[in-house]
Amino acid sequence: MEEFENAPPNSSAERRSVPSEWPFRKVNDVPLVFENRHSDGTPLAFGISHSDGTPLAFGISHSDGTPLAFGISHSDGTPLAFGISHSDGTASRVGRFLLRALWEIVSTVVPAILIALFINVYVAQATVIDGPSMQPNLHYDQQVMIEKVTYRFIHGPRRGDVVTFNLPDEEIALIKRVVALPGETVEVREGRVFIDGERIEEPWTRQFGGPDYPPTVVPPLHIFVLGDNRPVSRDSRYFGLVGLDQVTGHAWFICWPPDDIKLIR
Image (cartoon, rainbow, N blue to C red; front, side, top):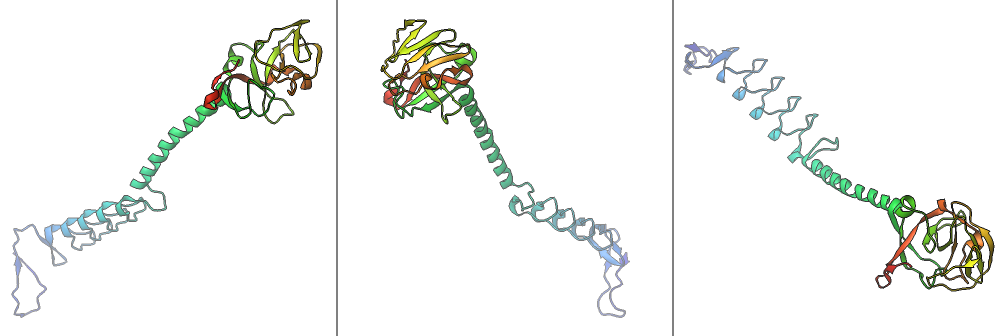
């Protein structure tokens, strides 16, 4: 049996003893529960402590040894309430949710934008009619779908095609009808078209008139274009022949307004 020596001599208090068969022992003559202690010898409840020897409730702590409620902390050891991160950017439930939501938006919107851009540049796009030169077939504010695949990969413009093209001095693309092809001699008299000296049949609706154009050979990789409303149209009679590299697409059908939807002929 081992005895405590803390009671003063001749004290009326009983000198209590600790059974030696219990798994207790004294450190510096002070009883220690469960024989567990810190590295400096101080008692430790439940035998759990920080690395610096300070007691730890439930055995959960930060990396610097400070107690941690619920065992949740940042990488720098500061407490984290309910898993929400501080301004240092450490991961959290809210942060992970926001990142996941952002990723879902980006992974959906960005491909859609890229596909739309690809279609607009290489496949098709809509353009708005902004002039009277193609009346009565095309009118102000109609939207026309421009198809771009055929001229890129299948064949070039053909007579009667309505095409869009860019000119150096024009801010917007123009839309006209092809009437003469490379190698042909084209002439215009009172709005009527002659190819190699013979008048051609034009099955599309048109208005005759406007300036004449003298016989001219269309060089390779060029076309001659006219508007269907020839008395007012500004076309190849004014700005000359159009290079195939200036052609941006084939006007395929009217897509707006709904009452006007139809193929362009």
